[in-house]
Length: 467
Image (tube, rainbow, N blue to C red; front, side, top):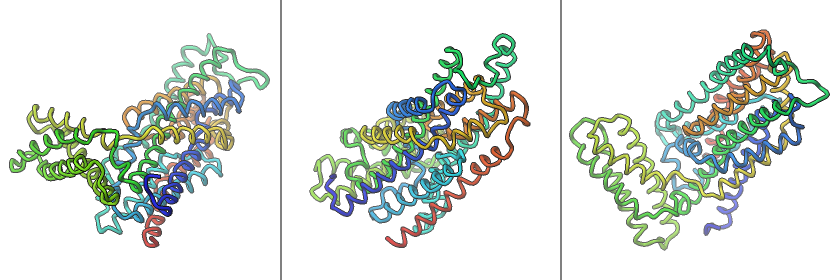
């Protein structure tokens, strides 16, 4: 398999298994976010709800693209991704996976709807900080902090957005519909299902949350597997081998020419892209000329190095395009070059996407009950109404779908939990919230990042020392 020797092949398989385990845990950890409302409004039986949710999660991953997955990859320093020491790569992989799984299982066990997104992001940041310590780099170089800040704002603002919009929307529905359709705002009867139109609405919102959960959270698993493959078998996965390497010649030459022209003008610091582009062109031509370097180890090194150069070039181009300080014609040429370069480094094979889809879908079908109880019974003091369930899920689906489109990971758990809290407040004020549960959820929200950053950093340093 991939021409690997026994020990490395076992390492690869174990690492992929661990990534699949994370996604499986993510499935049953986050299932409640989609099915709690349909279960507690008796719109679907629990077994039917979780199976349907698993099906929608599966298709969410399959159809969701890879923008969030690439955002995960871009958090780590390029040096660590192209480190030719397999042991170093293994330390990174195991630290991320172990810390994420430990925290996810721990919060699930005590019934806390903690965020798998926060968990994974914290684990990645911890690895970056640990790498900064052992490599002699500053902490500012250990993590792509601009990307981390972008993701952090998304994780911070999305639950606040969910709370405000859900409470506002439910308040408007109460004003508009409570007199004409009071059943929407009453506790569901314990001995019968809701009217068919209400079941249909809640089924749609449940399906949307499940689908967009797959499209966002599933991509995190895809990103994890791609990290593993790029680190352990760079010759096969550092670059998309379905792309024609000869198509790199023109865009990197464009980058070299334009950045070279600005080497001395002082308007913008893009001159450093010229040598990187020239080197990328040289390596690409070598790989095309030989098609397959006889020495697989050498091929691995070249592919990893070319990936590192292309990633740095892409980051540089993003900065140049954002600053918009050069001539419009040059800017347009650089944008075209970037569009030609990106497909070589931002991709995921279909088998990876399908594998993660299956793991997330299967995970969705088990282990859901603990957090369903928290979502359905312990956030508000009153039983969840039809309107509250539909509004919370609709806002959650919209927020997650928008974030997936922008390539930003968000917490399905926090968005829906905050949405339900918002509907409870809209119904009967802040006194309608169970303070203990809200406090526990907030505590998990606050602690997840520092705990996983610390845990991941320590595990990384331990593995680095051992390996």
